Length: 407
Image (cartoon, rainbow, N blue to C red; front, side):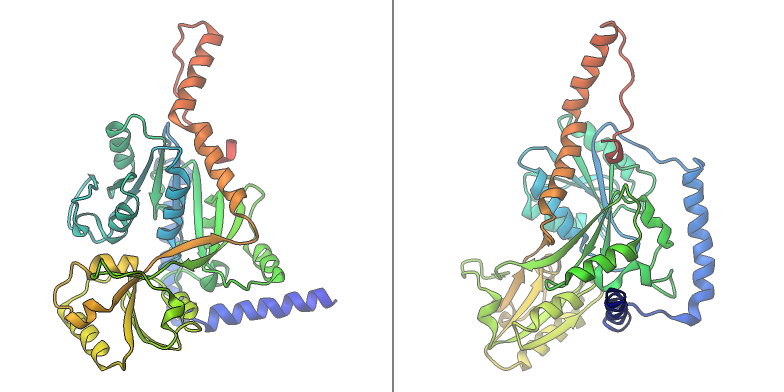
């Protein structure tokens, strides 16, 4: 009875967090439109499931990372984690649609590529991982074809924000779920934030609950795990956000600083990301005098925005500084009009993810094992062995089912 009571209390706490925190707001008067929207999404998914619309698989490991909600779930930090995990052993490519870019078609980023040509997130990743191949293409199938043509030694393709791009059949499908906006309590657009019904989570091989509080209790893990109601073939992980040293955006010769050094500063936090509330929540205990200035995700800063930033910062008492995210920094630094005072005090805060419950090694082995088993070299060796075991002359077919579930 006591355990049942505790579970009920925790469920109520979780419901309170997600319904009253940021975070989920259900516009009940829009529910009829959500029903109509749901019919359209269900029809699309049915067309894929019945084979009317085709999903392509590839003879190279493909890992998709995405969500089924509107707004940020931490896709970029998780893709960057995968790049960092795989880049020392494998040749890695990241393929993104390049949201809000000014170019068209397939494009591979170079060190000279401007942010406007590929979008803020691919630009950020290219700067952090210059050795990795970063490409953009709205047509993901075409993009994978071009990547494998350009680099015959490519080992793995990471698809950024592609969980719903069903024309590609990835070997591993990773679904990200924001702890503060758990999909199990949400509803379809436009009344809620879901882009497809909750059953869409069944396509995931791995589900990651992101942006978790660092003090998440064992009982809360169990309650969320049960509430997510995953299938046995699906693995559930939990991650939280960690922050690195602040680096100046314009004053390159200045040393980095830490968040703890800003406890007596007035800090202007500039964000143009999908869900800034967790960042604000994490920084508030460290920086008592924090002023958030939030814009929409991927916001392109205009003159009035720059004037607002300059004016807001000028009025703040000293000592003072500005913090922004890595993604926002890629757009701010290409914007004209920032005052000299702002430029001299503008710092970039790196964000990375950390696995909780000592799950990191389990996750790493699942990813590395899948890529190693299904890389092109492994397939070539397997194909050669199979041919020799048959008669040495029969070429056979390339294996097409490179799936995590079959590994």
